[in-house]
Image (cartoon, rainbow over all chains, first blue to last red; front, side):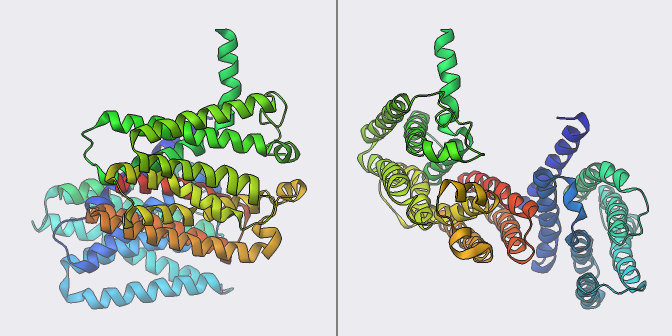
Length: 202
Length: 284
């Protein structure tokens, strides 16, 4: 086996184990909805990494990748908002549902104009910013332990990975396909590691 | 010594180690669902030894009986029996000795456990392979029942009786078998056709087969989940089980809605990993 493929599999396996651990231990003292949201995000991460090991990175050519790469940030950001910003819970839940359905819709019936790109960028962008900014605000205001900042690091990484993949699938790649495939296992692992550590210590 | 080594190297592929190991893991998991933490390592070792021998024996006997089919199929034509590296008589003796040792050891350990182990072997070799495999594609049902016997046997050894949880665990394996086998028969349908083995894709078409795969995946996940709840598996572990079951279901759905060789074989591999993970999780 090539060294690069071995390294890629090791990183993905570590991602699987970290995500599985997070699903099993859960996140303490949260309501049912954020618990479901966190379980969905780490669960999707787990299954996606497992499938990347089993089927290889070529599976990223599948159209379903755009939808899967959206579920993780949407559910994670929903958990964070529901847990920490009770005033906008319902509003954000609405955004998550509508945003997700819009992305699924534009995947099933793609439009020739830029509408799918706009939808994708908006939904990814908002969810990514929530995961990135919310932990920073919470740490600065003293609500959370400083280690919670790691969730923001994970948020930045998920944003990068998600956008790279999404735009590749839209036919407007930011980096070349081979470069994206080469860095993705490392991004997935670092992102999961940052999330798990951030949620555990923060 | 060199001759013994070369013989062992020749015999090793006859037991299909990955498949035997997976069934052995289900047996150990079945036992651990009843007796965890393990205080009797000796009993666990005897369970592992007897099951390994019995499963290996039945696999060798299956290969002995199917050597003509194997020689016609590209995928299996290199097997020692199909390629003539092991004589049929040698293979039959090996299969009988391993089976007798496994069942005999199981009976000395616990009579009911021994009966379940023997039933598994009987269903697998006699009912599935010798009687039905060349007659009907529904033979896999019996293959599934025999596949569920190791986990039931392990549970029986731990409990001293056949109980509902044991039945559910066996059902989970029974429903998991179509996911595993049918994805395989879709991938190698030409091979099976050449060898004249009836399969679901040949009898009912690919679409119906994919639907059966999806339904059986859901049923396997439900059975294993129900067994997990009844065993008293911790909530976090159950949550992980649900996530893994979700993956199985989504892949099965993808095979039904957007079939491709890649997804089909992905499901085949995932199903094995799923079963292994589920066994580990319910044993914790």
